[in-house]
Structures are given as C-alpha cells and as structure tokens.
Image (cartoon, rainbow, N blue to C red; front, side, top):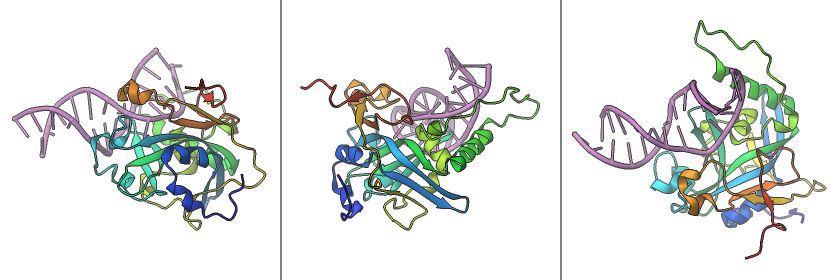
Length: 234
DNA sequence: TCAAGGATCCGCT
DNA sequence: GCGGATCCTTGAA
C-alpha cells in the first residue's frame, strides 16, 4: 500500500505494536561529511509501558528513560553492556513510556561507510593494554548484508551514540532520520517472535511476540521467527 | 563458549 | 551517597 500523500508523522498515533509492523521496510538515512548512508529497517522490538518488565521504564521514570515518556518519533539511544549503543524510536503519546528498538538494518547505500564505521568502533573497543600481543589472524570480512545485523551494529554502522537522544527522527531535514519506503520496493514479509535477551523479565513478558522482522531480509539479526500465516490461531 | 565494559538502579546506611 | 548485581551485545577463542 502506498503511503504517498500522507504525513508520515501521523503514523506515530498508531499503537506501538501496529507501528512496529508499519515501520518495517522504512529507510534509515544518515547524511554527514563522510557521505550518505541509507538502509532498510528490517527488525524492531517493542517495549511498552511501565508494566512491561523487560522495558527500561519498569522502575518508573528515571533520568535515563525520561525521553520514553515524551512525544513519539524521537530517538532514545542507550548504552548496553558498557560498550554498545542501541537506537530506539519513542512511541505512544506523551506520558506513556514506550519505544521500538531498531535491531537490524539492511544496507541500501553507503555500505562501505558503514563497514568503515563499524571497524573503527570494533578497533577502539578491542584496543589491548600495552604488552598484550594483538591477534595475529586477520578478521574474516563481514558480508555487506550483515554490517548492521544487530542493535549495537546498527549504531556502529551509522555512527549513532547517546548524544542523539531526543532528536526528532521524523524531521526530513535532519542528518539522521527515517523515511517511508520508496515505491516499488520489495514488500515486507512480517515475521514475529519473542524479544531477545529479556529472560530476566519473567515468562509473562519474555514470551510475548513483540519482536518484528522482515522474513525476506538477509540482514535480520537472528532466527527463529514465525510468520503470521504459520502462527496457530487462538 | 565467554570476557569485556561502564552506566544504571536497587537496597541499604 | 555507597556497594554490588545487572544488563534490549559483540567478537575472538
């Protein structure tokens, strides 16, 4: 279905779980001095409300998660495991803490810039203290489709960090933004599954199929996922 | 398989 | 205001 003629921002009124399906296939765009990077968003995870025990909002409003309580369409970038930045798109009206974690992007343009940026970040991280010998084996090259196939990798490949938190991702003039898919683009085959790495939330929340991906993309972070057609009807 | 890495938050003083 | 457990992951072993 073409979205031409509609204001993309109006989609932010959709409930988070519907918005996740809608934003699959959208493009993430970064333009800076290095050039232009563009990719297709192929995997998202929903974090919805204070009751969601997997969400950063599960302890209520704090300094870190404050942006999640604000208006939708803005960026929330946080640091995980002390080393990886992760990009979220804030959803739901002001007052309701919710967001969509961007878990994977399929490169469309500027993949060389993405590879370089990712390599830079990996090198900065693996820098050993003096006296420790560096690895002797050259690293296997990463396939282009896998350059941003993970939430930390999305931020590495697009040079995103926490300073971006609060930026309006729906501002068409912004250096970092998201835009609807172009006409004629390969259609999205929505598949779903439980969110990754949230076992601590307990089964009631960890088992919810709030992970959404394009099953036709080679850039999804990891299987398994289930298509709507295969899902048993309840 | 597993360590790296630091911000964040809880639960106490 | 402090100590300690935890974390929406990645890459090298």
